[in-house]
Length: 112
Image (cartoon, rainbow, N blue to C red; front, side, top):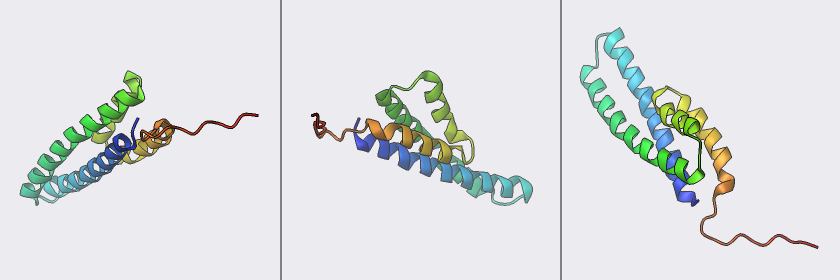
């Protein structure tokens, strides 16, 4: 697996998580204080498009890392739970970093 696959996922996980927090804040202002209706619409549309991109990148990473269906589903759904994507991203990076090859041959281990 190449490093770029993990990097794309990481970027979109953070972008999606931040946009979901912004959307949650907009929803609080819209329904709690009766303001910001236009901003909520724009942020929700942007989050929707970015979440679809996140789904594509997370699915691609999951296929290359050969995740189980349950793990893939959890990663895909983490973009819909505020702050969950931050924690899931950290776990996924820790688990998939050893799988990265970058196309360069791995050095032979020294044996005596």
